[in-house]
Length: 280
Ligand code: ARG
Image (cartoon, rainbow, N blue to C red; front, top):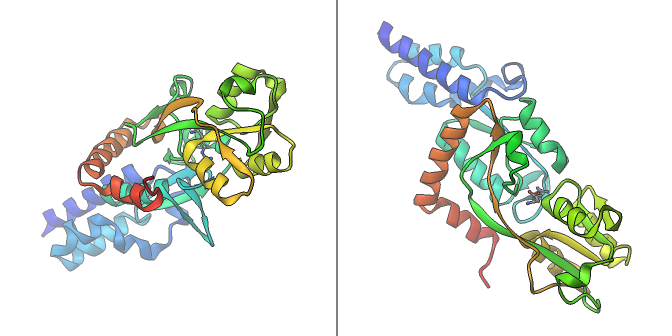
């Protein structure tokens, strides 16, 4: 019996060390969540007293904090008071694999990496493109999606391809690869930055900018929801999305990669993507 209690405590401690590295989880997690901790439900299920020992040892319920910017359909966006989308659902499936509760934090896109490097969030998942520059401050998991930077223009625009962007005013979401690449290629003075992709698209509809460079899937959503806009046929850049983790948290990186591989293998990720992106 003693041994069981001990192993339950150890299991709970392990869950805590993996899941509870976000912001002040010990004091903020609702206490009833402790009973959902896997250590309490699996290992300790054999004995009542062991189970309560595990609950005490894991008061956080094992929480993983994800930083995102929920202005990016179909990857993450608000549906009434919920954050939904491909990333939100993959993250929920990953958290489940890791035996953690998931908390999603919605912040500005250019704050996602700082939130992770400062340890306030455990990981960042925001349709985030893997870049060499970002790799200087965070580790990326294996990739889970391919993407493109697309160009949105007005239906009657004289811009017909990427070359036509030279000298035009381009709207982007601040800190995105669209922002970074376009500033480099077309000059900072030609870039208008918006805190949300949707605001850049509205500026295009109002004629304040000549084009918007943004990831292909959100671009398709915005074009379908706003009259008079179209996508250029040619993409501006090819990219891969991954989850970012603090350089110090190799343990979480490895566990996320293992869980991602499993969810790719068993079709979970394809299923989630198919729910949000209808094949043409
Ligand atoms: N893929 C682009 C990047 O990594 C844009 C991501 C924007 N994501 C968001 N949730 N707003 O820079």
